[in-house]
Image (cartoon, rainbow, N blue to C red):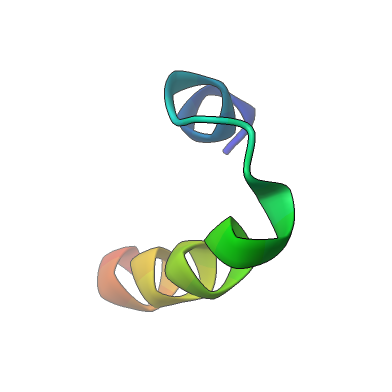
Length: 27
């Protein structure tokens, strides 16, 4: 998860929703 956040730009608040969607995908 950290690696994913690092690979992307550090736009934490906006990326949160995207992260959730990603988690749902791999869930």
